[in-house]
Length: 249
Image (tube, rainbow, N blue to C red; front, side, top):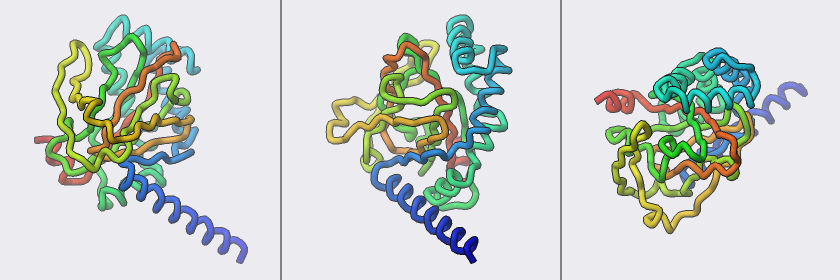
């Protein structure tokens, strides 16, 4: 009897928690899930990075190896970032029940597709890899909804080390973006900050194990990394059948 009551209370708690996350997605355009990413998967992701980079399996060594690779061979660095999105623990983490269940609810489908995944890197003097204000809609123009999963895999992220900054409730408006090509870097689809004055900006403060999920039209950007140490995170994007078909066109 005790076990049944305990399981009932746990189920009720999880249902209420998901409802809160869905409500935050609707109102803010994003939500943070605390302790959603299992630490064994985070550790496994670090192990793959160690193997790719041929370094020791500790945060400092991996960060140092990434920094050196970015300086010495930008093409290999890009390949490393893309390959890290394809490894098994990255895919497994995207399928964690608390994450995937929420994605299914927001996308209103049981059949969820992964569009892409990669490592993001933020070092103060590597401006070619820093996103200005934008939405994922600019990169998936023919898709109704894409949910992005974003999380730290080496260290906590905060204002000091340039975490992602969200424009709260910005997904409720249509935004005009200007395409800017950056040499050896990202194609910026920049939204002017002057056009975002009505929105409150919130930095995503996450510890290892925390994740953030956000919508296609939510405006966000890379924060300024003032820590002196490169900041790295992982992203995975989800969509539905119509989204995966339209993204190929």
